[in-house]
Image 1 (cartoon, helix red, strand yellow):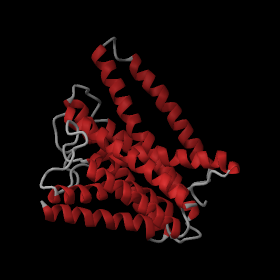
Image 2: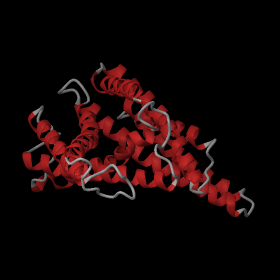
Image 3: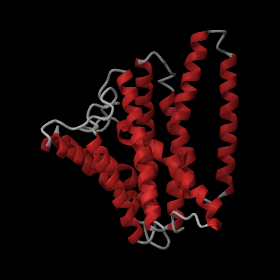
Image 4: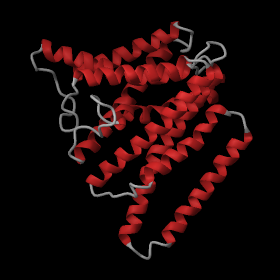
Length: 300
């Protein structure tokens, strides 16, 4: 189990490195391909979980459709200021909405068909809304990279979300050994491995990372902003992780899938990112609105 996990971790870090640090065309293409493939796998895993809790979807159709949607939305990475891309997205979602209601028309009064259709719509929105937000974060980072030479903002988004997971796991494991299994469990009914000791460790690690980004390239505006951002992103990311754990327990499974050898499924990998992406953009919007009153988190 260790070697597959190690191999998967190294490969994922390499792909992340290319998506962030490689020359423009290589990093953008790498991000685009990863986006489509991971969205496809994530949708398959979610459909499988929903099926096991008696919420069937159009699972043979939805993964391909959501991957296609991410392909279209991902064009924004390559053409961030092109009006034609915005118009394509606008008309695409208009026809999607009309197509949904047209499909309802042909369900022939079947309650099961309508239920499956709405389950499918909900699952699609659950994935596409944060995926579009992640694309927006990556595009914002690409717009800022002229001054640093790489996608610093997207790197921060990934690290500020995942550092808490890594810190909590490391501190929780160490505490468990030192206390000989006597760590204080947070919510054992949802996630038996999470402890209050690990939570505190992950929180501290995330704040330290934000302080590092305050000094490195001056991405974070101030120390207080680093503490606030570290706190917000850690607890929101942890909420996403716990929510996904709750879904898996409802489906009576340990992992969301087997897409990533040694680690589990794509859903296991990105659960916290799906929660922090909306928060990330909310922070940006609040800064734009209240910047005149001195509310500054990022130096953009």
